[in-house]
Length: 250
Image (cartoon, rainbow, N blue to C red):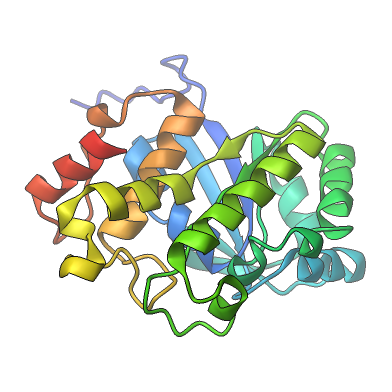
């Protein structure tokens, strides 16, 4: 029972995470703060379809074009510079826009420029690469053709590119895309080609229930080190049996 004691009085440190991304970081972080039950303070910088190149344009122009999101909902408009100075962030995640996520030469010089600015503005924050997911098999996304409209090829290309830049800049990877692909290939419930449910709601964004939840679980485990099995939160309308399958698989 609550007795008026705050988490700070208990000696619990709240970890602060800022995602510099787009709709894919929105998907991954939507449930993250709720899953953590107060352990994590999470904000997402959102512009739909925002590439690394666009982030640099916004940074150079100090453009206030981002939705500053909590739990997938916009709080206000903000610039990257404002967001970076908003808190003493412990972790800052970066990512490429989904359609270019497996195209190596699309990352530079923008990723390097973004990392350099973060290190100068937030020298104590740890920078993390967000490994996003491949599109659904029948996705109509305009960039799916870059990967021969093949989910497996897209997944593998994303992995190769992320590993390359993680090594180049000595950055850890939060592997949301691996978890999504593992569920697709190992769990009958999510075997879309054989009649299972898709983890995407439109062929590329994660489903509002199990897709977003799975990604958030991976982020939670990555940042806290806690076992996923200890998580008690689940989105409204989900089935406990499926939730437990997700938690035991990823």
